[in-house]
Image (cartoon, rainbow, N blue to C red; front, side, top):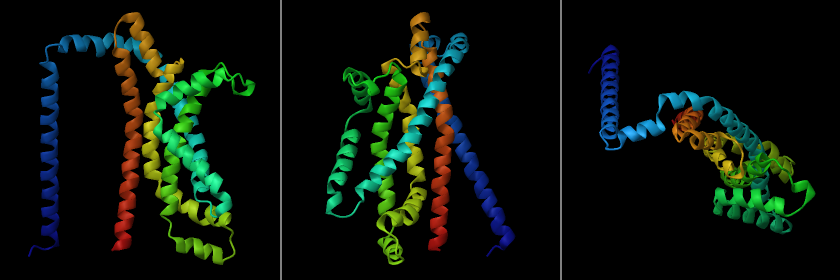
Length: 277
């Protein structure tokens, strides 16, 4: 039997061996991909159209100006979604027959907006709401209609995430809170919801990664975000590198969020292993 020092050396050697294999396999995989695209018959035309260095530099600034609008849309929509979705989830868990109409309304809302594609909601809200002729609903700013579309759809998804978190809290905790004299609302506010929110942070971040990407769909209403700016650049120069620039901006924003999600998932997994052990 090897001693403690021997076990440490074995673990270190195993770690280095795994790292070497992972590095080599990654290099080989990337080399195969590069070779596949470089040797394709239309590789030169694709490179000129989507990866032109000169057009990359020229389009970077206007596409970035549009991407700032994507970020503003994402942050504003997230703030609305976090609140609206929580309200919907709590309404779906209201007890008693008197709350039945509210529960049915919450169910209808989530079923409808999870079933209709976001692109159709963008068109319905952006083109249909102004046509209603209601003064306080009318605005010349398409940003507002795009924001409303994102909030409506993603609130339905996030409400289900919240609901799963709420239902994961054991009923004994609610019973204990009620035995202490707390009302149903107080039990939800002080006992259930705080625990539920902590449990659903990783899936919430996944939904917000999707929201961040879907902000590009508001370009259909004329919002000059990154995709529309890239389209405008392509219309003038007949070069599509602006789309590559926009995609790169989205990836650079998505990767930190994805790694944060992975970290939170792994942290929760370690906590569960520690509690189980």
